[in-house]
Image (cartoon, rainbow, N blue to C red; front, side, top):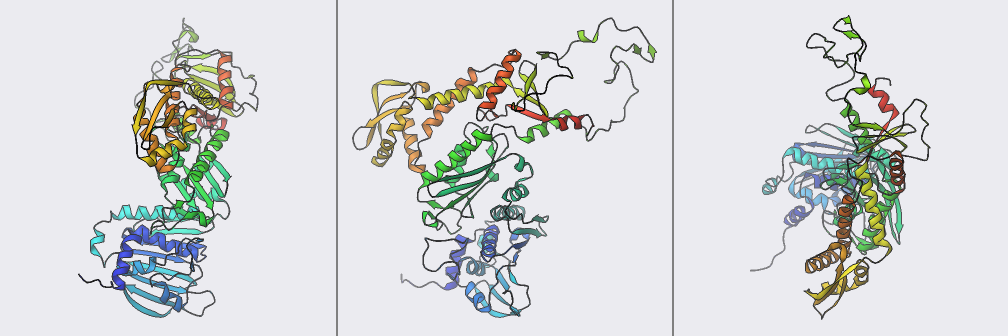
Length: 602
């Protein structure tokens, strides 16, 4: 079969299959072009989930008629010259506009600031209409209609209009977080208008616009540097989490990415602090020399490849854990909101519902207590005093009077006042109260003590009577032996046994009877993928967490006031004490203003 050159239209349609997967892909490319053009205001309009209409308008630098004609040709760009090692813009391939024009009805109107008139160019299914004069404001308007009309088979793979509209919304959110100085407006017949006003240099304010105002109160600032890689951003406290990973945003040199290495590092940083099935909220911005990161891995530009992935992963994990150690033990503010709702089930305000039956002194929840009133007539005081009535299990360790001293300002968790149901400690703070789950709190303290013990010295190991030989590819054996000293510190002694095998001589005593071969193979796979060896440490952490759970103060145990205060002081001094080993909160804080709201005093 003879070899022939494909037509330009077919080449562009092939490229469109990689670059433009769905309407959200087209929206991403067009928004990136607007940002690269220096726009400070970007408006996006959609219809039919972006399949019928996608319009992106900006106030950027605009294009001349000659630039317009080049912009819709393949591999024409103003963003790079010869080298791909110094990419400092979001776009650089010169594929987006010709790819879109080959599968849709593309119209571009543009005008440079100061120009007397603008220009318009159209590409419908690969057919180009030359530039012509047009009336347009300074900037650029790109309109895409009937996406994939030229390749109908692609339409079958698109999701519902609602799902496609939601994907475009997610793209706009990511861009909005990355560029807080730009005003974004997303509107259309298929959605309610979404607007993100510019916040200038206040990145946290923009994050609050996208992630909700609660994020501002539950975020910890990150600012770390390791060699030539910098990390800034914000990470949520562990108790402020979500049911999926959609609230994790990562940026490399301002470029929104969905990189597996970064997402895995976030997951590892929050290990043992987030409940299973829950995900932390984080916004991470990495700054790295463009020569040390490859953004040319995939046409969608959502994946990147770092020259030193271990350095990047270590920076992310270390920075988040250090930040959590400093501030992450505080309770999420959402806990108080949930507590407030629990105090008022079924009520919307303080209005009392109308009675459904005549009021009765004997049955009313608001009846007087031993006042001598009974059914409209006075009677003798009850023979049984109020204090003798059966009460819920609540026990104050010392009399609580109106003259109780205010706790020291240095004691963030306050002073213990009572123990409720032999499991919850009530403490008074300077501006409210704190309720502590004694078992969950002590469980975390024991776990941290065990984990610190593991770091301070070599863990105890148990020698195998007969060393276990594990057959592996030679390259996996090489990777494992690089980390042999690290394994030995954790109680796992290995040595080379020929070119394609590893001999396991000792295993960590904490693990008890262990599948040595399975453990070695898992470690080899993990090192091959991420160039790290955290799997063994994670297993030991799990064992330590289990031991801590069984060695902690149990629910139902009565504590003296001294013991309760000692527990509070230890919590204040222990990193991560705001949640137990399973990720649940160990305490909930209620401000005095919240309490006053419960009684309608605010």
